[in-house]
Image (tube, rainbow over all chains, first blue to last red; front, top):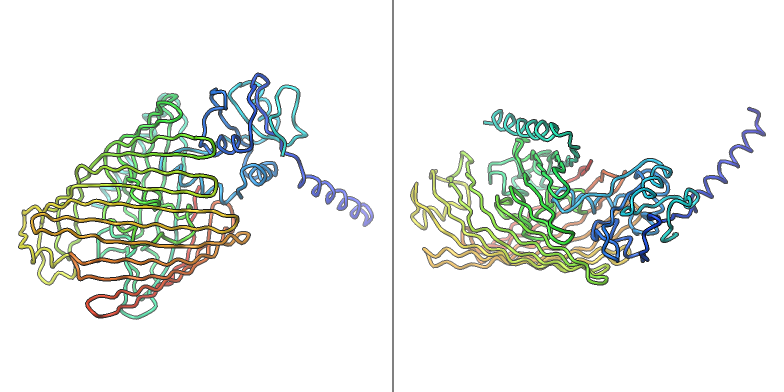
Length: 140
Length: 376
């Protein structure tokens, strides 16, 4: 690879990296879910403090894996906690029997499929990954 | 004795694994580990960090040589869902201060009635003060250990039942926990006088309200405590000795105490500032000798989140009018920093200075400790 190609590749990679840092996070639910959710509702559900949607239906949160950039965005913009703070929060609950963190899946596509097939699930993905099979309740 | 304990703990985990696996149930494994070293800064001084592991001659004591035992520990927890609402959890813990002897710290069945009510039964750490039930999980707080002046109740677990209530009212999160249980523990250090301790009617109620950045928690907890002397040693170095000789307790004699604990905790997370404080009173009644004593402790702590670093400063004050030992006022300052160097592990460095004012004399102790708390 000559020097020119290397420079162009680096610039392109940098542009993609920069744009992915400002990626939008979309919080999604099943299309039949008619609830309106505030950021506090989403926080309560993801922190295990609430196990139902405002209309009383069971709410089961699903996450992406901790290392996913979308997870970092979600934790920062919606839960307002860093990875370490979230781990410390869950450690106090997991080891005293008061709760456990949401199940985590590796890929956006997998999460979209799960939410599209279960009316009780709530998830978050990069807004570029949403399809018509799910309903968006918030973008951050 | 130690081999027996390891075998029984391992057997318990294996039986748990096999009996649950037989119906193809997923077991979720978690754990935590602390590797901490420390020492006192002046020759001949000592600092006790965990009175639940055998008192003065245990490994839970810092002295003037660098020690890795007092605050180090490891725990492994297995959790399995038996049905939609029923789960089983077992946590095996080994403390450096106890030669890493594995012990079943928690073993309980949990039944979720609905989203607001859960009942647990089995062995559990009772939630006496704010950090009591999660005291072993260094990763969950910024100190190496929460102020020992509050967190030094000589027993930490009971076998019984507890009920957890949760409710969200608007932006306020409410939680109530009530428990009842008991436990029988042998105080079996070889070099001091010993007793068989029977804890019965141990019950408590804890209430917590969290509103955005502010949390208030209060607890009321009472227990009956019967200590039956099993051996008396001459020239006993244990400060409990005056009790045995002063009240004429002989081997086989039971001594009955009524103990009550009251605590208030005020916690606030405002932006990057973290405020931690508690006030606790322990009332001990020994009716046989007409003794009724209140020990008061309070602390205030400020932490500041600066990227991955959390420096903190804490002041503790304890007022003990004297019962087993002479009356003493204790003041402690702690300065420390926690560094979240990777998610799941935090490096901590802490320096504390304690002054005990007792019988007209002042005793100063300083401790430097550092190490890593991790969870997985």
